[in-house]
Image (cartoon, rainbow, N blue to C red; front, side, top):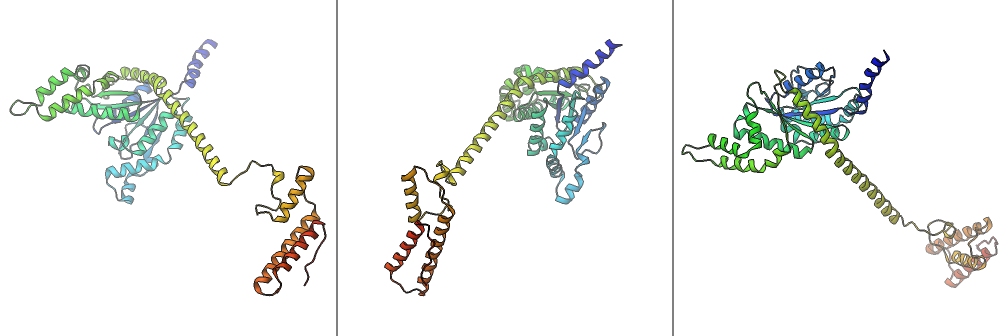
Length: 401
């Protein structure tokens, strides 16, 4: 009995240490992306490992699976179109932008369930450009990839890709998504029950085979190759390196064929995330942290310079505040420095005498400006000097009326 308990608890402990992998499903409208999501969900349930599902398509009317987090519960797509006077694509983009403002909370919910699931499925809008080329799509992708291992699954409609021109268009779009997200990438040729994907693998492995197919189907009425023919042939050579570092699997969302190959590719992509993407992410995070500390230090130095902070000891500072010292105060400081080498604190009588003398000097100056005191400059100087001499002796002196 104890042996059975230990075997049952071991997988749970292992799963708690291993983070779940996020499968970001991206595909053009009509590629079978929603049906593929349903097949992934049913396959994982059959393995007793139910996934955690996020739906980011606000315009979908019906989903054949139950999403744990649904954008439609937060944003009303039709109401957004009505309030902002937008069309269908603008409404989807605005709804996604509004949802992104709260995505930190969504990510918090996902991270809380990270120890209980092995796979997290993310369904994106069918209008592929809204997610792949918008700021909100980039924010969501980066936020997920910075927290959990993330894999991009690009769904392709295999029967429609049988045309060489359409195939090249799909490959160019896949290449752009790969280099934009920089995440591990899987090409998923869907609907293989209708059209096998062997031709696509052959075109990716041998560019001459692709050029032969292109020449057979892209000739004009005179039997000559068109401009598109020449362009697609050149692009095939450009994407050869892209093909060599790409995983491609064929699946049928209707029959479930190819699901095992797909999840094997997901595990390989997870390893690529840990070995390639995660170290680069940590390096960029360290650089941002170092730059932030350098900016803080620069701002602090600039602030200290603006405040004119001095390194002088506090004992030599002016006890009367930041105002310039008078000749009387300078003489007092000089005398104390000569006698003891240090500036001692003034007693209360001396401070009071100096304050009163300074107030009286200000009153005399105001009186002269108003013409109320008719005296000559030497007498003013004498009175001022007498006041300073009395203050030196600690004597309280009143100016004559």
